[in-house]
Length: 145
Image (tube, rainbow, N blue to C red; front, side, top):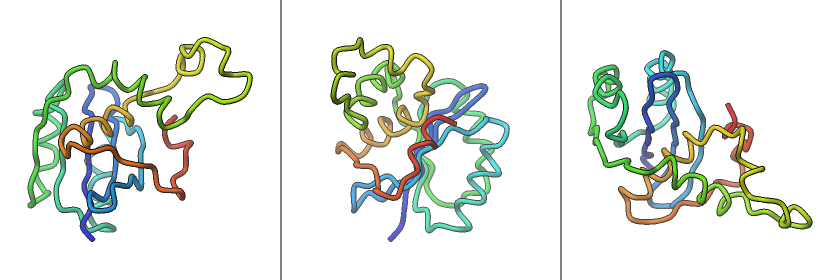
């Protein structure tokens, strides 16, 4: 089945999610240095059947779109307003707090987290108008790269 890439573009780093819409599952969620994004996407499209790329319309989206010129299928630019802010709440939906940690302020758990991959997930979810789940095989450490 074809998969979709969603990108939260940035000057220094980009969040990237690889998902399958029909299954509503995320198979990869990482943060990539912006300078490495082009090669990373090239490698992904040779390994996966990618039907489209969705890019948030914020910082550097035009530059990112130009770097992905080699992708001959559909590239969509989509609204990404407030995704970084919303990523904090989505983080706790994906990784709920349990036990005694529940008594601690939520902010403690995300102070040093890069939320760009979750922002890319929110862009995808907004575009598709549905929530996605993480594949059980996903390496949760990829959220922290």
